[in-house]
Image (cartoon, rainbow, N blue to C red; front, side):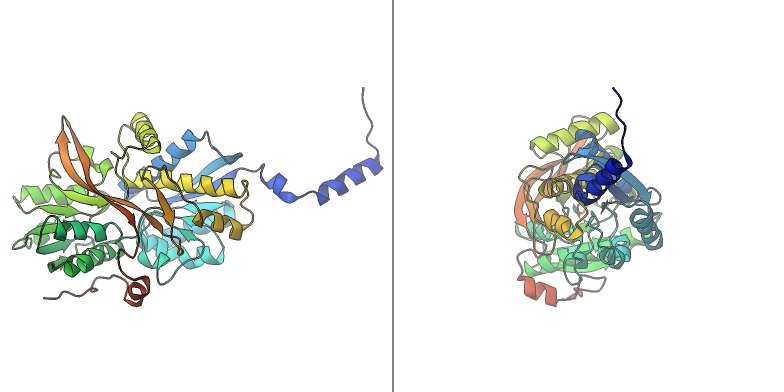
Amino acid sequence: MSMKLSRRRFLVGTALAATMPLPAFAQNKPVRIGLLTVKTGPLAQGGIQMEQGITRFLKDRNYSLAGRKAELIVADTGGNPAGTKTKTQELVERDNVDLIVGPLAAFELLAITDYTAQAKMPVLSLAAAEDMTQRRPNPYFVRASATSAQSMHPLADYAAKELKYKTAITVTEDFAFGYEQMGGFQRVFEDAGGRIVKKLWPPLVTPDYTPYLAQLSGVDVIVQGFAGSNPLKFMKQYRDQGIKLPVLSGSVGCDDALLKSYNDEPIGVISCSAYTSDLDTPSNKRLVEGMVRDYGNIPGIYAGGLYINGMVAEAALEKTGGKTDDKEAFIKALRAVSLTDSPRGPFRFDHLGNVVGNFYIRRCERKGDKLVNTTIKTYKDVSQFWTYDEKWFLSQPVYSRDYPPLKS
């Protein structure tokens, strides 16, 4: 039987529809996630793994978060500040994303922080720029991975107190992430009685490390913090030069996902990371199995970090009932997330939006025909301020190329 719709009924119906609450309609729209990553240049290896990690998470959730479909929009920043800012503006103004995950590098993040704060755009980033959660906090920023120095503080503590090293030379790229890593290592190492003899800063694009390798002698240990594909080049040239000094590494310098690209160069390297592939948690097992199945490689901090970012976004959406229209409520929910099972173990956020969680000391070993990082110690509930008083820490300059200065 057909029913005629009178003009009066139509007008009443549309009037009623206009008075209905909008969130119910909004929830039917997909959650749009913008990924800022790097697909070209020396940092591309990590950037590609970032995309793999967030894609793996969304597949595990059947592209549905808190009752809403999820869409991923990927933007290649080119690994430079100008490109990152342009892509961020496109994600916000053209693609109307609900949140951004990424970018990778500290210098990329620093280029967009003012814009994203003005746009009130929630950002869940892997980039480790210290001041984003310290002296220049962005109220719309959340970091579930680590600051640059957050993994280096416990590494320095372990080097001085358990490995009994007294002197070290640091070497890493000449950019913000490198400065902040080595500044953190230096402060804790020297406070524990050690001494940094020399700090070396090769450019980000360095085909031949010979001039730097020639300076690596006369100390107990070498500390490297290279990122992307640079650790592969550095460690190969290090071993080819016949240098026998032990090596300590930052989180990305001996990343799990890099190990299949090495021969025996990293065997014996001790590193510290917020993520380790051998962590025995249900969510990490699922991540590792999915990454091996889809990409033929175990995950490292780049893929694991983005998978964790997805979990944080999901938990926040569940608290808001799937709503993202109220940016203040959404960012509040993001910062209130506390997870007991994640690929990095339990964690929460401090009042500045930075993670407080476990960090893992690992030794690179060969097991059968594979290189693996084996966890040898866990530092629990590590803050971005380490064991220092927060007010004192924030009154000091941000870690930089020249701070802390060399005591010698």
